[in-house]
Length: 402
Ligand code: MG
Image 1 (cartoon, rainbow, N blue to C red):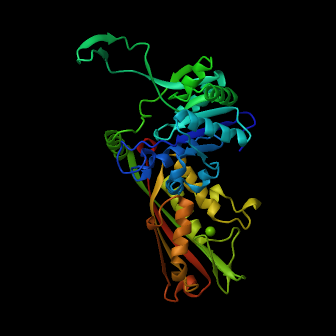
Image 2 (cartoon, protein in one colour; image 1 turned 90 degrees about the vertical axis):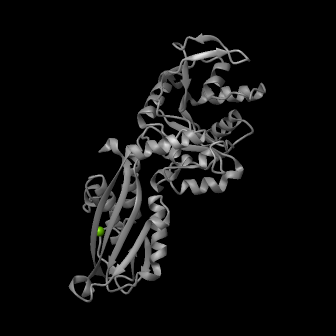
Image 3 (cartoon, rainbow, N blue to C red; image 1 turned 180 degrees about the vertical axis):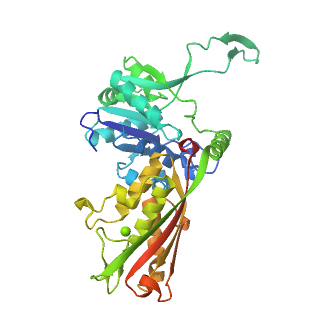
């Protein structure tokens, strides 16, 4: 990635909380919304932004297993920019400080975005505004006007007064800072025994910095209660559409001792003639994923004339297509593949192929079907001249991209 002209941006996603109020028996960041954990959505939102380089997640040490499971829902191509997780502390402030120290250990950054894992709806536009605000100000936080009428009440419940809401803002994350300034403020606050700050803007205020408020997003809600989760589910249902894509690929047999199918090396008395590794299953799936977005085909993204794809491992092609889908807020619902050949036998490798495809796509293996058939010795596959694969992929993605 060419970031020479841009300040290097790192995001710290704070996921160490123990909040169980949302129900489900796990901390709320590990609850699912529309089939995926809140944490994997928040991480993917950060990783899908072309303004954000590395991402460090702060987790509670007890949540390691939940974290690993959530990562499996993040597309592999995006996961590559995720640094090892930092461990949270006793308070939010301590957790953020640990995340910042982890960033410092990685070599630091120009700008850091600090984001609560419980806000999975931060849009690419909001992230771009966050980075732009941190380029202008040492400290900037997103805020939205307060729309409810605010009252002060007595202990007995009587109204004592009405608050002028004009100057009020409800503050969100991602909050954006010059990295060195925020790290220094957190270290000073810790040294002074102040670990009670509930957001990072407040730490910077305490450290004497002016904190700027930029335009937040009403849709960037924090999921806390069961009602919040119900609202989020309804939003997803209303705002998504389903699409289907089809892929087909053929390669001729040639000299060799194995074929690659579904990312799995299968011993065979022939190889395939191909510019890449000739994996018809992954090529058909790549075309099917691109097809859901009307986004060209594998040949337009990876021209066979380009020497860099010679012998390339085809998982890169599929990971690229899945990353393009994720960048639109889409995800794969299921894949169904049929391999057509007389040999090799696919059955013994079926589950390994399903597992590998699921891994590349960032979905569960039970969303990947793998079938095989011969063509009864008819046609080119029947004459054992080559093998073919068909794939169909269903995706869900935001309807705003319709
Ligand atoms: Mg091919």
